[in-house]
Image (cartoon, rainbow, N blue to C red; front, side, top):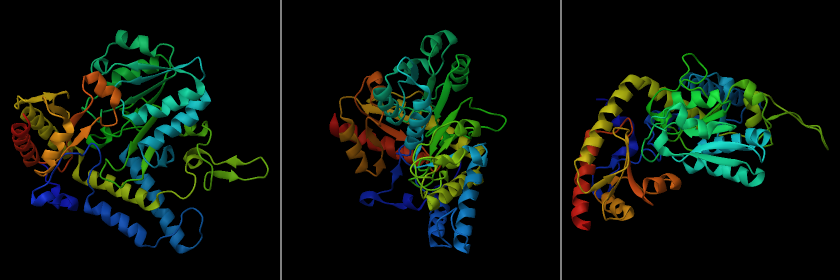
Length: 403
């Protein structure tokens, strides 16, 4: 078993004087001390704005910022010029919608989303749909795990884009991406993959060989991957980036500026990084990637697989629960039968157990599962069997209080 808890100072918090079992990692993960140190060091100096100054502090900060991009490119199996720094996955998807979408979609076109998407991969497309008028087709969540070509063709045929999660933030459902993406490409679709959850639990290979994702756009966020908030990534090949219009205007994304017209723009990823970026956060994001690499994906995946299986078996043995997740995903969605999720979450909190309740920014998926809200317990590399045992004991006590 991986023993990583000691790297995360926030896990020593004792809510109401009790041990903390933090099981809301699908919302945001805690930060290891090395990430906190990297963020502090970047702000402590030598610090200055990047790409503009000829003096020492600016040169040093610029080098650290671009080194972070290289570190993250290696981590994601990509090239540094293919990575655009954004605020988070949400901004990355909005960027694609407002650039690629505006450039390629018309009122007579269709795009494909899935029932299992986070709102961040639904609403940006709906906003664009309201402006342009294209059709949104919805792949049912029941087709995602084991689809056939015949299942997928009615949704994909004639469409222009597939935007799909690699792992549900609600249930941990993992769509069969090799089958789905290959089918989408055979029908000529452009593909966006939301890797916000998946990038935390397994290695991602984008443009390097072997390539595990046959995709055009990939998005993820740092704060779920043990990094800071306010920083995320959009990946696309350089030729794709060069053919997209700017998303925002400002400093750093220009080539030359002329008045009243005639401004020209930078090429590649620089075109989409307007203004002063989240410099320290990017450096700390790279520190998070280095931390995960130092632990090793083999150790992380083995540890999490063991705990995911334990979580499934533990919750399955509680007869008063209604479970919504597939087995052993590492994200367990459930309710106590006859009790409101918010009431249960409040009572669990009083016993030192942190879980999420509500619709998890996935209302269409919850509706398809037959419930307006549920509880969610989600694992991370620092999770332990003791966390799961504490959850089970707290659920048993809570059920006796409410039922």
